[in-house]
Amino acid sequence: MLKKSTYTQPELILLLQSNSREGFEYLYDNYSPALYGIILKIVKDEERAADVLQDTFLKIWKNMTAYNVEKGTLFTWILNIARNTAIDRLRTEVKTSNVVNLENITDSQLTNVSIFNPSPGLMDIREIVELLMPERKLLVDMVYFQGYTHEEASEKLNLPLGTVKSRIRKALQELRHIFSMQNSTLQLA
Image 1 (cartoon, helix red, strand yellow):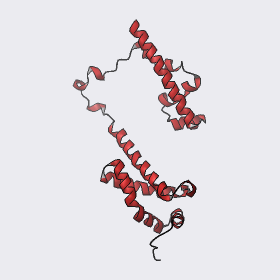
Image 2 (image 1 turned 180 degrees about the horizontal axis):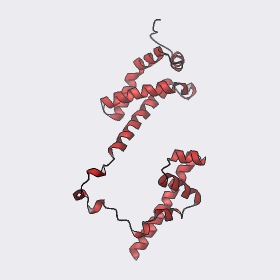
Image 3 (image 1 turned 90 degrees about the horizontal axis):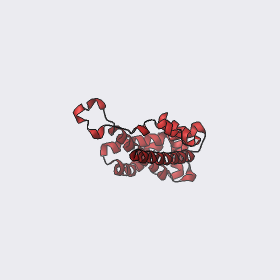
Image 4 (image 1 turned 60 degrees about the vertical axis):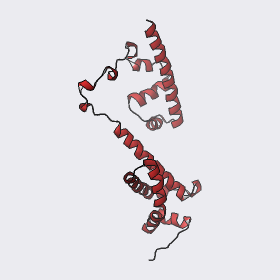
């Protein structure tokens, strides 16, 4: 079978959604330079950009059935996948680079600045969280004490993600206010 030199967008989408090797080769050959350029601008390293490009095409291949013509062009859809994959890679690298191995820190490296000395009034944060409204208290407990993500808490409580985030934001504002009041009371004593 001879390869076709060009495809219309609807033809290419049909090929891709039917997992056609020819369609993916065409997509890679014709779109990878543009995607690579965008990825390189984000990750700023050619080797990482090549890895992200590979991850991008893997995601495109796995999620091609999720593409909806009514929501935008194919290029816009794959461009968003490339952009999000590059940003996710940066976030992952930042998280792993900020991890401190405590075994490698000597006693001489510890200074008074690095020692945490909480004031006695702030020792039991859970007691202070109990002062919050019940729906805020529950979310703070789930997210900060039990380790749920906002999305997981949203699913578990069957609440919209925006509601979860705004309640947590309000709870944190309220806690800041409580802490500032306790600090000013302690300083006066």
